[in-house]
Image (cartoon, rainbow, N blue to C red; front, side):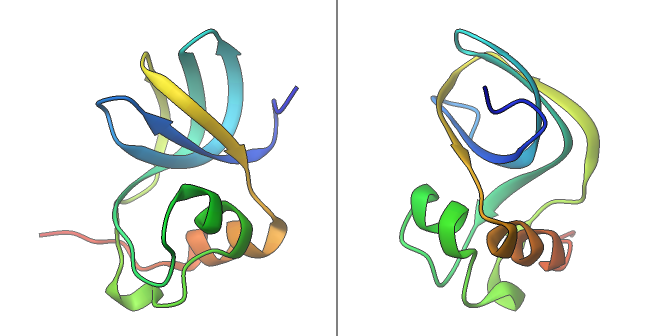
Length: 96
């Protein structure tokens, strides 16, 4: 039902990810154009990120964009607003 939409996925152990939903079957989720959201500022939790984005993008730690990922432990899939998607994609890549 959310296939093709930009979503936030929270995994039970794998973390929080943002990307385009390719497929979902039970807890198995495949995302494309995906980033791991390690740390964020200016949002309290995943629902707020999906709705409003983050308020302090330069302080966030979001990884580079990977072509795809398969998560086996999803516990939450939240469609984002267009505003939140644009903000998430504009967060600078965090690297060491």
